Amino acid sequence: MNNYSKKKSIKHLQFLKRGVILRIVDLLVTIVSIVLIAFLFKLKYFNGFDSNLFVWLLTYTVYFLMYGEIFELYHIAKSYDLYFTIRSVFLTAIFTTVSYIFTPIIAPVLPNSRIEILLIFQTILWSLLLWRILYITFFFHPIFLKKVLIIGESEDVEKLVDITSKYSSEYSIVGYVSSAKIDAIGNQIAWYSIHNPSLEEIISKERVTTLIICGKAIKDSFQVYSHSILRIFEQGVVVISNNEFVEQLTKRIAKSRLNDSFYDYFTYSKYINNTTYLSFIRIFDILFALIGLLFLLVIIPIIIVINHFLNKGPLFYDQKRVGKNGIIFKIYKLRTMIEGAEKGLPLWATKDDLRITPFGKFLRKSRIDELPQCYNVLIGEMRVIGPRPERPTFVKMLEEKLPFYAIRHVIKPGLTGWAQVEYPYANTVEDQEVKLCYDLYYIKERNLLMDIKIILKTVNTVLFYKGY
Image 1 (cartoon, rainbow, N blue to C red):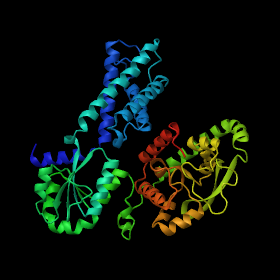
Image 2 (tube, rainbow, N blue to C red):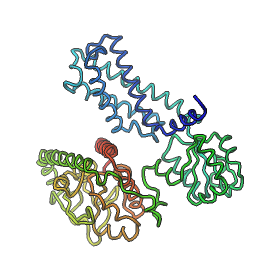
Image 3 (tube, rainbow, N blue to C red):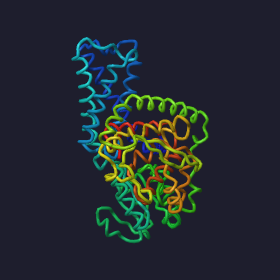
Image 4 (cartoon, rainbow, N blue to C red):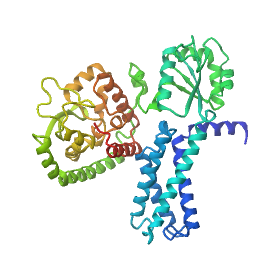
C-alpha cells in the first residue's frame, strides 16, 4: 500500500463512528458466544447448523440493537461509566432474551428445558459485560483518545474545553493556539502562542488527530497557517470549525450560528418534501394514533375512578397551540394540575411544579397524559415526532426574543421530538433557546433513522419514568 493510500485509510477510519464499532463488536461477541455455548452444551434450542440460522441471527440482531438503543448501551458519553454500563448491559441482555425466546416462527421453537433459556441469557450477559469492561479499561486509555488542538481566542477555547468534557469521552484537548495563555485552564492543556507559525511541529509533537479553528480566528489563522493547514489536512488530520465540532458533539445547532449569516449555513432537510418519507411517516402516525387511542380507551375507566378521588375535577382539558405554518389548533390532554392552575398570565410548567397533583405527576412521568393528543395526530394536526407545539402567548414572546424561532413551524409539531428527549426541561427563555437549537438540528438533519432513535429514546423515558 502506498503512502497516499495509507493516509486515505487512516482518514476514513477517523470518520468511522465509535458507536458503529461498538454495535458491530457487541453483536459479534454475543453471537459467537451463543454459537459456541450452543455447540459445547449441545443445546437443541440454538442449533448452529440449522437452515434457519440466518433468520434467527437477523431477528436477534434487530432485538439486540433496538434494546441497546433504548437502554442507552450506545450513549458514547456514558460508555466509560462502569455502573451505567452494567445497568445497560443487564437490561439489554434480559429484554433481548425474553423477546427473542417468545418470538414465533422467526426464532427457534421454545426449548423443553428452561436451563437453556438461562444459558442463552447468561451467555449474552457475561460475554457482553466482559467485552465492555475490557473496552472501558483499554479503549479509554489516553493513547486511544482523539487528540484535539484548538486555534482560537480565550472565550472560544474555554467554551470548547467545557463542552468537550461534558459531551465527549472520545476526544482529549491536548493544546490550544491563542494570543494569550488562559488562566482558567492553567497548565492542564498546553498553550502555544498565535504568533508561533510552527503549526506542523505542534501537530506532530502532540500527535493531534483533530484541528479545531474557532470562528473569530478563522481569517487570521488561514493568513498565518494556510500552507500548514493544507499539508496537515493532506496527512489525514481532521480540520473543522468550532461550530461544526460543537454540533457533532451536542447534536444541536450551536447558539453562535443564530446570527445574520444563519441562512448561509442552514438548509432544510431533504426529507422535508420527500413524498416517500412523508407517506411512510403518515402511515406510521395513523397506526400509532389508533393504537394509542385504543390503549387510552382500555385504561380510561381506571383513570376516571382514580381522578375522581385523587385529582378532583375535569378529566380532560384542551389548550390552544401553534402548529405548522403558525396555524392555531387545540390539543387535548388529561388534566394533571389543580383546577384554576393559571390565574392571570400563562406560566411554563417546572420540574417540581406545585400546581401538579400527585396523580397528575404520575400521568406526566409516564406520559399517559399525552395520549389524548393521538386524536390530533390522527386528524393530521400533529405528528408523532416533531417540535413540541407551544402556546400562542409564548410563541409571540419567543419570536421577539429568539431569532429564527418561527422556523420550528415549517413542519408539524409532535408528541415527542429531538428537543424533548435530549433537553426535557425548559421554563426560561435561555432554556427555550437551547431547545430551539435542538429543534433546528432536527429540521436540518431529519431522516427516518433519526425518527427511530427519537422513538427509542422516548420509550427509555417512559420505562425509566423520566417525564415531567
